[in-house]
Amino acid sequence: MDDDFNMSMRKFLKQVGVTSQQAIEQAMRDADTKGKTFEAKAVITIDGLEIEHVVTGSIKGQE
Image (cartoon, rainbow, N blue to C red):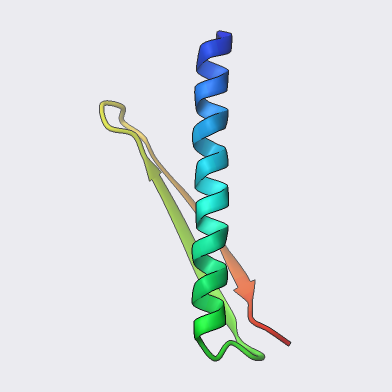
């Protein structure tokens, strides 16, 4: 893959990571999360390509 492709993909993934973390942190601050674990799912799709990438995991609330 070429440099322009790599840079655009890295920029997109950085934006996904940063904005997702900010949204999750805000939601966790606004809710009672003490001692709870939340199941999380992220879905990435790309218009024009046959791709749907799903990532699942869990996020622990505040101690």
